[in-house]
Image 1 (cartoon, rainbow, N blue to C red):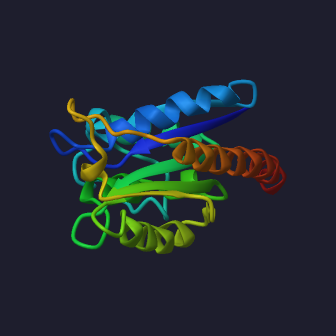
Image 2 (image 1 turned 60 degrees about the vertical axis):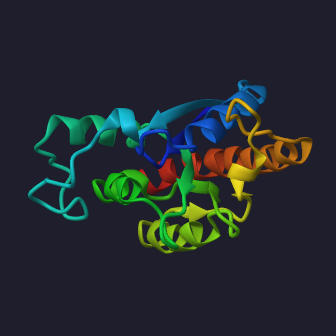
Length: 193
């Protein structure tokens, strides 16, 4: 059994990102026999701007209790979906901050992306994230989801109207993520031995 975290990468009031995160979590329940999949909301984690004295690439002797708690969440995880908005052709500061708090906790873990935004659907935020996760030794997967002009697909209550095509893409993404999380979990055990 692997542990997958769906990380909500925006803390903006009224943000849209919680909707696709909750929807993906519902789809993921079909894989409950293979993976424990949970939502991690950065608005609830509420990390301050990185304030550890020593860079995480040099030491994991964290000073702050919130850093230790964040490190445990990520360390105990085997894979991730970053749910990311696109802000000014990139991703949010709160997501970058959360990523930068840690280093080896991310190593050799697969990641996929569910992005949203204007015409590009958050594609540029994902492209920027790919460089960051590569530097951290993560494995970014080809399978991902984009929600272009999400605001054009809301019902009268402001809820996004997910389609069968969305669900099919979500399943492909989750199946790839679970597969590689299982493989890399074994590989990480071999590397640690």
